[in-house]
Image (cartoon, rainbow, N blue to C red; front, side, top):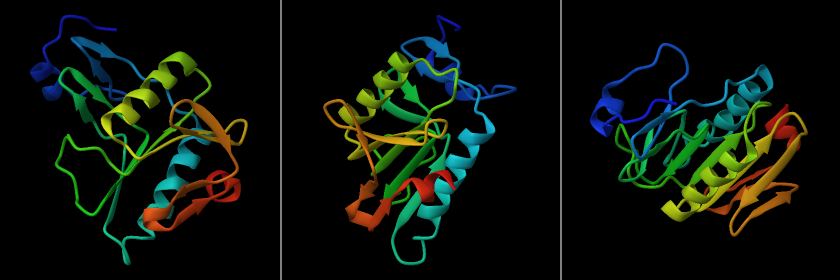
Length: 163
């Protein structure tokens, strides 16, 4: 963790390995993804990319997003609906998906999910490729059999997400 960094400096910085998040003056490292993490992420993006011919959906991976002043998070997958976002989105996407890695700290992950929901993200999902479990976040974490976003006609089970 690097502290005492101005947001303007963070936004101009590219990191030699994995991009980092920004929390009120601190640059925070993210967990390194595994193959299973990357596979789940790719399959999720593919589902939303397949909708592009019919619906105005704009999926992206690992994109810096301004959640509030002083807080920039990087969801594993985000899906914007109706309008393509700006380079550093400041308006919430329809869907945000975090994919767990073995070295993720659950308290930090849950905090991020809560921040996405408070920002206005309608569908906040957590996917664990190692246990093959899926969760939604509303007023807390809830394990589900399917992840659904009715606005875009998506209803995903374990087979679609974990291959």
